[in-house]
Image 1: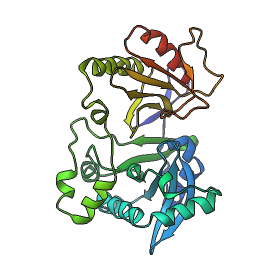
Image 2 (image 1 turned 45 degrees about the horizontal axis):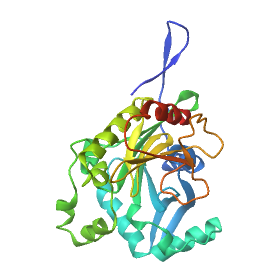
Image 3 (image 1 turned 120 degrees about the horizontal axis):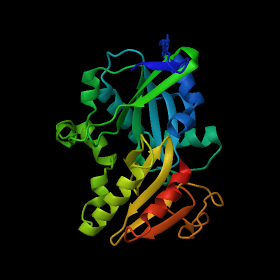
Length: 301
């Protein structure tokens, strides 16, 4: 991928890549900008446990799960083997991760407060080989690949390697390895199909209508299924949808008092427990207010 800088109306300048010399450079940039890059909370840099060292230990406050981040300049690594090793390490030493979180961030979460099934490992590198991409191209593998590059003028590009739409399940592979099978049983990567399974056809069609409308609001909106809801993200969560038996519960990720809703169809849930992000929710059973709801969601972009 090339980046260009517009110099005049008819002239562009190609920006030269300025490669990172050390993994530590990548790590420093990421840890300083975890909230912006991945909407994560930094827990510990260089977290040592059981004679192993985790580059960055982070926490996802939306899914209440720990995230392990490893930085690689070398392409000669097996990201699947290393990823499952770290996942197994965490599941076998949950108390150590809780203690580190509480001591570093001065919190008091308990083991049951963490959704261990949502744990994942993120590999960050300037590039991945086709073999590495293929090895992680499973719809239910808790390993993510992110490519980062630095260019002149202090520009940074960040790109998550997406799973293909035809990605298969990793379960047949993990079933032949006891350690991998244990990890895969406890850690769950959710898909849209998990949320839509068993729902009436009219609810599925309703979801597809709202999904298409949200994706049409802007370029690069990502659909990401979590344990409790389906998120629509562009840098951050814009809206979340919970699939109900007779409709959809839609959340808008804005704080109380910041949404312009002249029809008043969104309910303030800032002081009540709820699954999605943001302080506003509504339940829909038809597409009657679809266009109006899109105008509300667009306020998050």
